Amino acid sequence: MREYMQTNIEYNLSNIHLKNIDIDSINASAKAKAQKINENLDTMRKIEKYTLDFEHSSTLVLIFSLEFFILFSVQYFIVLLSLKEWQWWIYAFFSLSIVGAWWYAKKQKKKYEINSAKYNKLYKETLKLIEELEEEGHISKKEIYIDESDEHI
Image 1 (cartoon, rainbow, N blue to C red):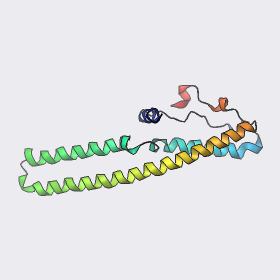
Image 2 (image 1 turned 90 degrees about the horizontal axis):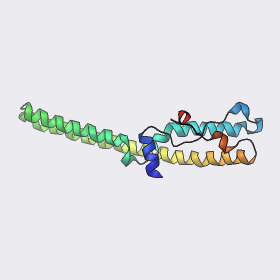
Image 3 (image 1 turned 120 degrees about the vertical axis):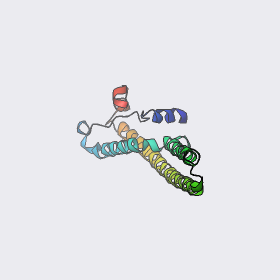
Image 4 (image 1 turned 180 degrees about the vertical axis):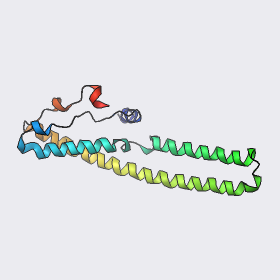
């Protein structure tokens, strides 16, 4: 299941298969819960890309790609442009870029962890609210499921 979710996120597909509840068509006593569900779903859609493993994320791929580009640039400057006398300065710059990449990756990993925890909390809360509204007869889960891809992507 985790791999399925990862693949969906990588291809910009949502793993949230629910539409927002139409607030105007719901009973006044259930509007607050329905509004909360809609807010949770919107938040979950926004942070969904940060909910999966950081180690498999496109952010980490971008960091590594940038570092490889810098490494090859370093070699280019030293060898092809005959900058042997600047070699240590160039290597120092490369070392600083590694430190910067490490710091950025650490910061992003924390962002993934925080948003993943927030997503899981919102998921449980939203599921509970949906079940309550369904038990009270205000909504039907079938009505808010997304069946067509036009609404989903």
